[in-house]
View 1 (tube, rainbow, N blue to C red):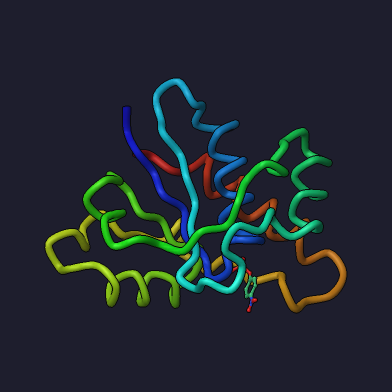
View 2: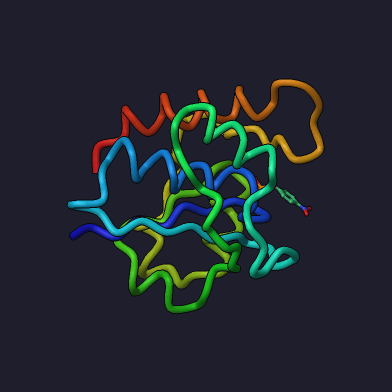
Length: 139
Ligand code: 4NP
């Protein structure tokens, strides 16, 4: 069982979607999948309603997730810690000791844009970016 943690800033838009998409694309038989934020403004909250809606549109239910910040032991527990953008990866490398930096990576070579403050189809763009990258991921 490989353990994967997806990380974004707020843990209410991108990484909850990544968790839901991973559960679908990678499957829950061989992977334990979770998500967290480098920030802690939204602890205990469900994902952003727009993220729930775009996932639902694609047949994925993320409504039961609850936001949490990354924890200091996450780098020991998880095999892969996957940031949504380059800032997430920088922050994760500051949070976790160097010995576990090999577990930290970005989902895609290109950062997944934060749709939180954006307008229009940002959440659909986010979904497509995450899904395409997830299918290319070899863990
Ligand atoms: P996320 O988006 O990192 O994809 O969950 C954000 C959600 C909330 C905030 C920032 C980004 N915020 O500043 O509250």
